[in-house]
Image (spheres, helix red, strand yellow):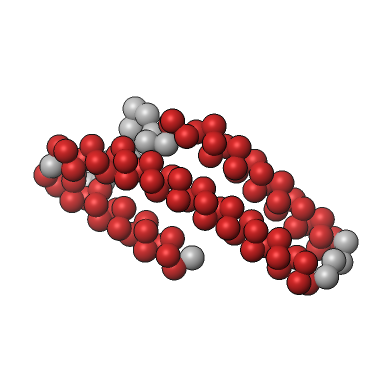
Length: 101
């Protein structure tokens, strides 16, 4: 049995408004970065804003990961079997990607 990627409701549903609000803020930060480059702003100023946008994206990733673990993974573990193992492996790989980014 493979990893199920379709669900009736995503695990982050309870935090959807928070995630969308943060993503809109990040979108604004990226637009600001584009303006800074267009305006030939100082490199260090731009790099500071890149760092802020990166931290904001990592924050969204953590919320999504926490919700995934609390809902999708924990439900699969309760049910057991191959799906539980697949969800744990999937979560572990996602954590590895986040740590490396």
